[in-house]
Length: 392
Image (cartoon, rainbow, N blue to C red; front, side, top):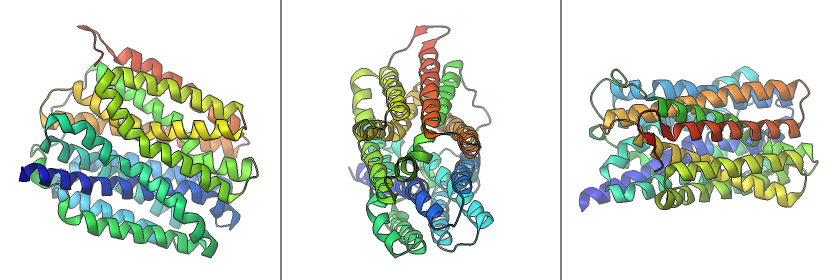
């Protein structure tokens, strides 16, 4: 009983890691983009490239996190990730120019990937199997919580000044680090073998990872441009950008729990199929309509899909690999790296298109196309080449 209680304390600590590493260090940047541009810290193109630098750091972290954990231990790597993520938020309070921000946004992405890749696989095996779906949903609530909290406090902080907004985020990161510090998963929860040396991905897992990468590209336009679209594209102002980002965050808050519950009822394959279909419709809605009702609904759906996809792909990837803990960690690391690669490709490609004169409608339409690609790749992944369909 005490072991399960300790495991749930670990789940709470992992919630803090996703709240800091993704909710604050990554997604809180989106509602800051209009303010950064308005205050002349950066041009629109530079502000978007800084968002892409964070995603590039996420890719670097996703591909090195397991090696770092093998060298220094899971708990040390997680603590280092939380400290680094907090430092990056504090460092951005100084307007040191594009190169300064480029460095720290890259590091924040790297730290966030360490927290995502290492936290949940280290604590979920300690729980009873019947509770792992719920626990995974709780852990990834951090994404939505970070978006909602930052959307709530940033407008007030921005009225004082941009440095104060960054300092406020950094203070939140420091509090989360202190709260999680004693309860982060211990090294004993991780395999001691050298990571990745014997793992071989199946074709089904490969197609799932391809679908996850396409999902990442499809999410980029909303993640990077949604707040700016309302604030500058539709001329509704910075406060409106923060409000729509809160709507996105409310969706992200509900997404992981809904995704886990639906997967328990109808299986991961069907749940992923529904997620991709809804996201195609939502991205198309943003591309075709300026109605606030359509924008609100689409934003909530895409917001729910960000952590919802994480929960569903995590669960599905564990079914498509050998049952030993190291293979499961390797499968999740591969999926995370593919997601990061998709977001790097999408962020830089879409940023380039936007800086070259692209419009918001074109960006959101691109998101719809890649969500459709994800749906198609997911359908291929749901069929085994040797044993027929697998629909759970």
